[in-house]
Amino acid sequence: MAEILALRDGLVLAKAENVKNLEIEVDALGVVQLIGDHQTTNHPLGNLFYLIAGPS
Image (cartoon, rainbow, N blue to C red; front, side):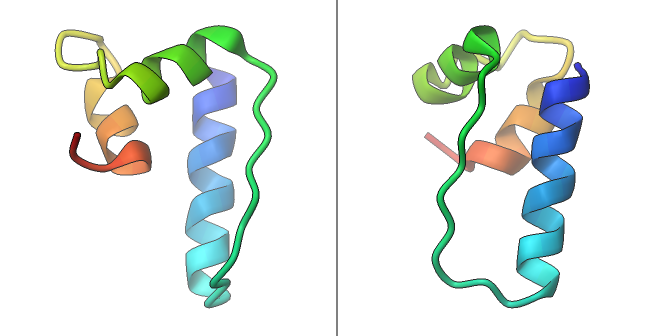
């Protein structure tokens, strides 16, 4: 959970600073797979994943 919250915080900061190009690296395999596969509908943190990855 800490990894997904840190990712969210970094994206919020980048948006606030009007960053246009951003490269993200995450070493939490579970987080990467959930976001990449859009398999978050029934996940307890599904809304947070949706905010980060956007609609599928």
